[in-house]
Image 1 (cartoon, rainbow, N blue to C red):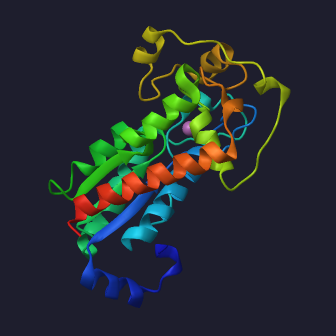
Image 2: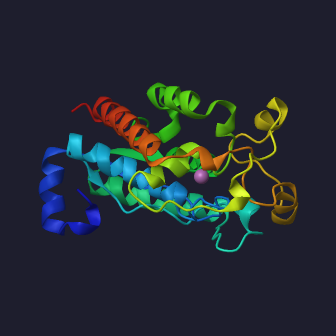
Length: 244
Ligand code: NI
């Protein structure tokens, strides 16, 4: 159930039976030659919507304007500062909590969101916010490594591209046919959580936008399996979190 498609009367009735809500969180940034700008937001939103069906959860509108400063050298990326994002989330969480949403489940699809999300949620009573990225779950990771191995990489990953393809556009471009430059283990360690350099430096290092990810390996069938695995895991985790 989408919050934005409900009336406030319906939300009030829902709150009589549950204090749980899902909040998908993504980004608006380049995802290489064949990945959509909205990839992170689409993944979080689609998985949350699917999971919510099985646990009858309300899903808040997706937060899609988030920090992605390193990708500002690529047209179409829209980024806000981590501080602004944190303040916005903090106010939104406080408002929801005040209204009776005492179990707020944030489903994340963008690494750079994690630090500000954690900082923002620290202002609410312990146990009222749970933050999970859709790739946190074992069943999802088993598929990611089965399908792509090391070619999953770090950005414009075939798994996220596949999820957008489960039910959406499949784009081809010759620039994505060849595998990207392979990342070293040290690079991956140093850049976890999207800790990349400035926009010009980042674009110079990764001219087509992929960061170690061979996006072209993504198929709609992979996407459907990843979506199913992620939605099942999220639904189970949400149930445990809300105690329903
Ligand atoms: Ni992404």
